[in-house]
Length: 458
Image (cartoon, rainbow, N blue to C red; front, top):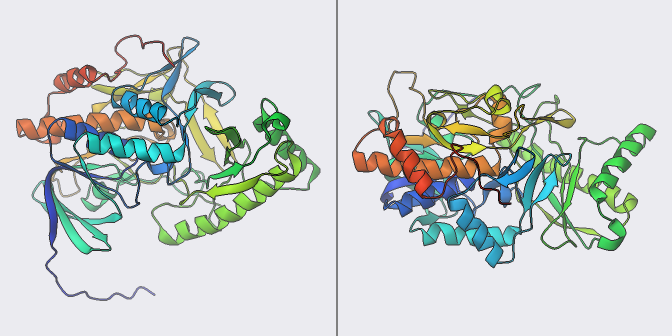
């Protein structure tokens, strides 16, 4: 049935007017709001949940990927700037592990305590002078010639509008860009779009019995069970790792599919519902196997299932330049660099995860400013007051399989917030700012742009 109803026209109250409005409180949104506010812009960060962090908190990820690069054989942190301050806050909250090697010991990642991350993100954003609006979902935009005039939100307070001089889409799904008519693309669900997962955490692990590397034990036991025909698992290459307290482990080994086998689409509410239902069943099945078969897990239990399934890929805008997989693997340089990505291509395909590593020992590619710029609308009109940052930036499917992770999203977000302040100060469209000036400001803020050798710190 495709029936419709006609709603009566209404006057929508204006919640407020701000210099910069950021939609989405994940890693890109956190840094965008903080950097814009520090530059003196009145800034509002709109987030649908009651906390920030995106996939790291709502998705239960609890690990920062992409902060580091494997550079000439050494693991160095290449995401700096505001990320330094966020990590310092986590350390003070006793909420950050030392970096650990992951993906066949090929690169470093860093586990954190989810509750500590929520608090640290609150402090960073509000301490920077930005305002947060929780429990509000963006549902549309109001346009004026060549620009966005307002974003429409809905919440327990009803339907409201937020006016802004500049907007930053950090929604993950490119929602603002989509509503504004910006060109975008989405990989097909079969043999294309990356599969989502549902994360869960296991508590009461006997660390001594579990041994040094029980994640390898879990993988071996799963392979043996499948070979024996006693079990079938939705995904190979499980990730089962300790958290800040070694009694607690995170488990990343589900894969969520449609009835036809394709990936769940994070922009379709029916598919999201299916993903939650089958995800929790997969989590239960996987945990039961681990508990019953793995030394040290005999008395363990599921302490938490993530509030939402973890979406890796949906819409990606098509801007003046799309970062490509070859750019990632070839460690490409760009004259308009705004940060770097050191994570390899991590593609979640049917039944497993495929990794493709950088071909050069430097181990990272630069991220060009052009990937956060929206393309021209189909009617020929630009959207001059919008940046799109995070996993929905202008990247191909292959490049997004790498640069969607936390580290490069931090970098893109900080650059977007800083650039928005420059555009407003100069009175120009977002694509007309002086890029060398943006680069100088980012480097003054401590951001690593990949133009020098990275400082060898973990």
